[in-house]
Image (cartoon, rainbow, N blue to C red; front, side, top):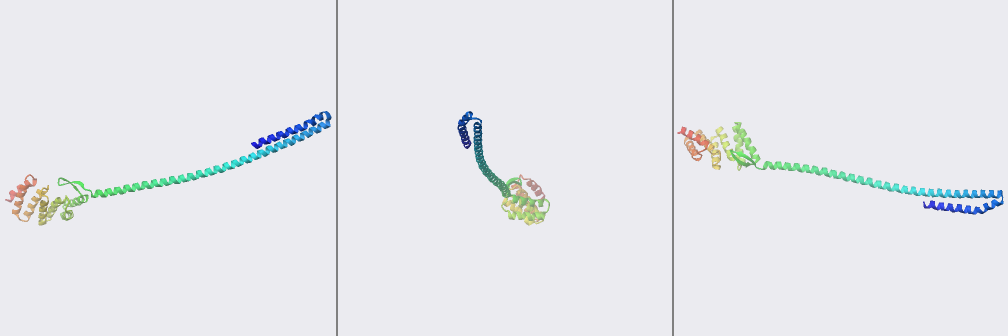
Amino acid sequence: MQHLRSGWRSASMTLTLVIAGLSSPVQASLFGGDDEARRAILDLRQRLEQSQNVTRALIEQNAQTQNQAQNQAITQLRSALLDLQGQIDRLKSELAQSLGAQERLARDLTELQLRQKDVLSAVDDRLRRFEPVPTTIDGREVLVDPAEKAEFDKAMALFRQADFTAAQTALASFVLRRGASAYVPSALFWLGNAQYANKAYKDSLANFQKLLSMAPTHPRAAEAMLAISNVQIELKDMKAARQTLEDLIAAYPQAEAASTARERLSRLR
């Protein structure tokens, strides 16, 4: 723009000088004849055309210079925009990678939490298998190991099915392996009954007596003494049977087994 203004000033000065230089000849031509005036006019036109040509050349030159500057500025702006776009694309790519990494981490964390939950659940299940559970044994609330409860229930299921041979084996194994279990007194009682059903009278007698020795206040104690008298009768030891019945009535007078003992004792006398 500065070049264009300078060109206009230069062209204006040139035109002024041309007109100033021609003013005298024109005035002379007015008084010196037509030929001389015509030549002066032609000369003036020629100089004016030259001045116009110079002016147009300067304008074109300035316009060309301005266009070149604009083109250069546009080129630089385009280059800057391309660089900026490249930076934006790189940032987008890095952000996408970062988001992808975060999503993978989130998935991994979720999977880890699920696996941890599964492991904890499995551990809890295993621990529950060993934690004592409340149960009722012959009317008494006790805590027992789940495994021993399952084993005892299995043996009793055989007894209820009247499979006394299998029940005898299962109950004997239970007493042998789980001597400290709360089920042992009950297991001895039912083992003695299974042996009695199998006519293993001496073994039956021994297990009933062991029950009384281990747990004389057990809810099955009176029934165990009545069972002992039955075994003694089977062994033809009536004297011992009567003594057992008398001891039963004395030790457990309020028990239902004591009432049965009184009736049986009256028959044995």
